Image 1 (cartoon, protein in one colour):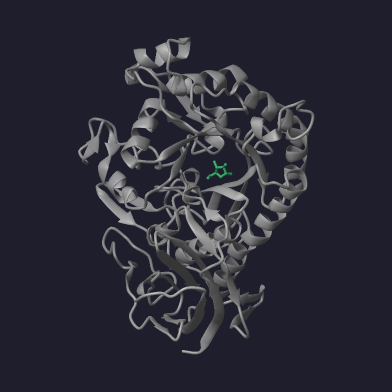
Image 2 (cartoon, rainbow, N blue to C red; image 1 turned 45 degrees about the vertical axis):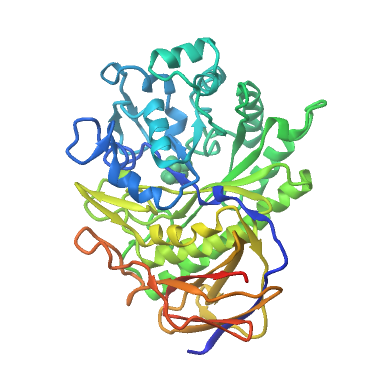
Length: 506
Ligand code: AHR
């Protein structure tokens, strides 16, 4: 295969730590994510623990998911947490106006979510209601979850069966406040965010990491207003006493919001448009980071991309409000491109959450009755987990590299990132060209390495996907022929593939 990329990887130059929280997840009360996905209830036939589906738990445990955002999304701004505690059959019902206009019975509430996080071994990320809630409501929720003594909320938690407080570090202040979270203007939301953050208290040794809901896409003006207003006029407190991060959301779509295109049937042009849109996340990360740099040059405040992923038209015949979509090799490549970008911006990006974990948008898992399907995107998360909390390593492209010239502009056909941890180096490679194989040569300088172990995710067709009937149509396998010759790592990549190479430092 022709050389698509030559690059130098500096094994002795430590970049920033790649927070494991860049590999976070998202579970909203939307379609079949919670109900039918995570939660089947205590009377279900599928194996469960206290109503939580165990095959889903087992599959996700293999990803070491670092945090799980809940209960929304748009749903968070109409959710009243007190409706979701106490005996299940006495909980009030509500209408989920955003997602399918269905009746929500509140059977999955705070205790069920915390039980799920414990089963998954993951940290909770709770999004509080600013759009239709109150400061008191959020303040009480923090106290209910995290306070240890006999305070009113701690007592209430005990009455509901949980003695010890939980540790809940991550708290979202609102969600998409410029849209479904209240149609607010940036200065108005900035004031609310200051107020909500003030009353979201650190109880005992539980330190909050408060994430103010932020912009959509390239709305840098929103980020600037928010950051400017939350970092000034605080007297002798520093901005990071009040806020620890601001967020933004970015979805990859090939069409427009009216017609986003099919998940499984797409043209060449749609494929390359998807690639371009996925790569655009780099520009957005740079833009929002630049705004933060102006107000917070020492990088105390983090950036959180707490919703990202592909968004296609729903699968034919499914409820349009449930956002159920298939997931192909194309989605896996979108994930690979995002992770490379996340690693490159790890000095400012502290948290990211793919939307969403089960049965919604770019999911890891699809359930169909008793069947459970791991998607191609699932495998990218699994293959990349060695980057969690690793030290990023600089990768410099040298010389010519192959580029694809499409209507939408030129695109490099190979993307690479690398990190080191526990005496090993992990290299991830995303090869975008669906028509040709590619050879990549990486000069590993600054240290010596031992024998490489390589895996690849690939399929004959970039639209290939997994189903209940063919659950392993797209699954990782060993990649042969990977070698280190005179300090150069040589990898031959099949068309449209994602690969990882692990090398011991010797
Ligand atoms: O992830 C689906 C929805 O997308 C979320 O509820 C909302 O925040 C975003 O618009």
